[in-house]
Length: 266
Image (cartoon, rainbow, N blue to C red; front, side):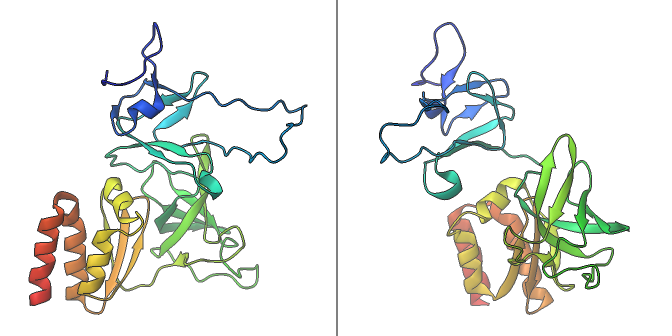
């Protein structure tokens, strides 16, 4: 076991805070700090106390009676409590996983494979295809149907995603707006990278995206399922950006800057 961790007497359980940044294995149990909750039938005496946010359990973890059960090998990550959906903080396992498992709320790139009545079937890279209703587009009605053909690329998010039900996608947010989702243009280049690289590119203020934007102007769509769609002014520029993004996973920051400096000098 890692040094410095707090172990419960007579068991292999450890405090989650002590394992952040360390490798965890399937079967490990992470203990959460005690959080006294108010009885539902009683009102708190201190009305000015701010309500405590809900702790989110991310990918690679599952709730259990003792705390959090690890279901995937990788590094344990923790997000400090903030505002909005992460008011109570979040724990997840960062792993180099090749096969994508649909998660509710994830924005992915799907390929239309078939149309069955009023539902489109999409390949999202998971164990089974996802469904997409023609009404799940902004402004879509029974008379005004979206122009979606087999082979089109769809950028949307999962509305339903669990092991007991078929994944269901939508191309609108909670307010009914597209927010950039929908059918992706015909031009461009679609390729697949690891899920770890996708999470790195989606991080706020990603250095890779900022450096590439100074090289060429381009359009970029990132899917949590490991698919990336790129479009630049020319085919040559598009292929250069694709090659750089694929190589970024195995390059250091200095190597990447040297490669971009050579391209910008040409």
